[in-house]
Image 1 (cartoon, rainbow, N blue to C red):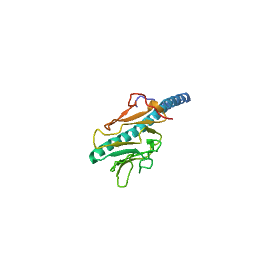
Image 2: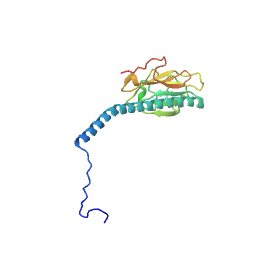
Image 3: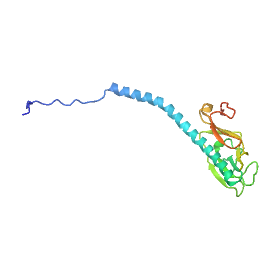
Image 4: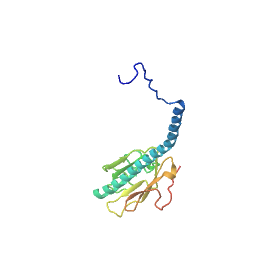
Length: 188
């Protein structure tokens, strides 16, 4: 034999588990961490939505500026509720916008028969895009353009607003302040 008593019975293995107090403590910790994370996650979602649409309009403005130069003709970015024509009476740029080649140079710009619509942006939900301009016109020369400021606001109001500021040369830039360096304002 190996030195063990032949009739000796091994002790049953000790069962591991958690007590009710330990389980409640873990539940409280998870609830506390969740209550801290949910507001941050909501802010993250709002920031992502705003950034997506700021970048969409920024891309649109760059594309229109390039199209004007490459096509040697005025190119217009205008708000459009139906994505087929300019709708200057639309309440906000949030209703969508289009880019088109303004062959006949009409003012105010209008999509006429034979003028190509180059880009379409459908309605933007849960975000308002304000601007004093209903259209931005890009000319094929660098010094002719329309200055504009677009302010993007969501449910957080002015504290989280962003702006796209278009210079006289047509170059757009993103800012947390207006062209004069003042705080952005959100209507409503």
